[in-house]
Image (cartoon, rainbow, N blue to C red):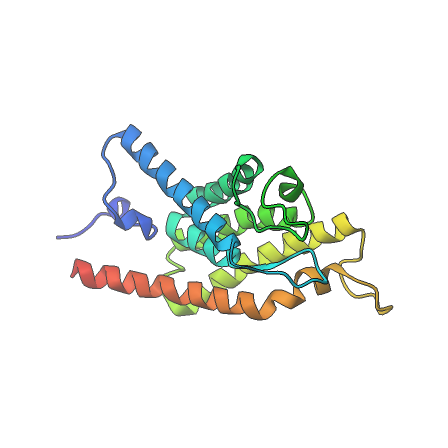
Length: 214
């Protein structure tokens, strides 16, 4: 028995049974989007302040990459947009707390790390786009997909940080602060581990799906 291309799962979430009614599918997608927004918020609470930069180390990028891979580009991007917007109004901790101890609100949503929030949306969209084209099903293509998503987060975050702090993007040779040293370099090791972990998890999940179907 063959399976039509239209019925084949495009992402990991599509492996799950989908409601046949349009309202049911919309409700299901809403729950998935909200769930990954909450996952990103929870990962934001894993936080280490570095002192010399307004950007903390968090677990967010791992959740963002998984959101894109699991949900696809539309739902993945929407989950991160919901995360960004919901944090403005949430009465409890949602974003990673800033150095002043504030846990949420407009000051964080539009502040020095706003570029990373925008990057989350774009990264989830890109990783989701690649996942829908089966780039998350093999380690050799999954890791580069996660690397591309991480690079987008860095690009958006660093450029906005340079604008917000009115500092150069890259080192100028005079020892003055620059956005790369504050918003990229300190996070390379940790984010490499996160993207490798995310890049390994999705092929493992697909292998489990294939074994289950057999």
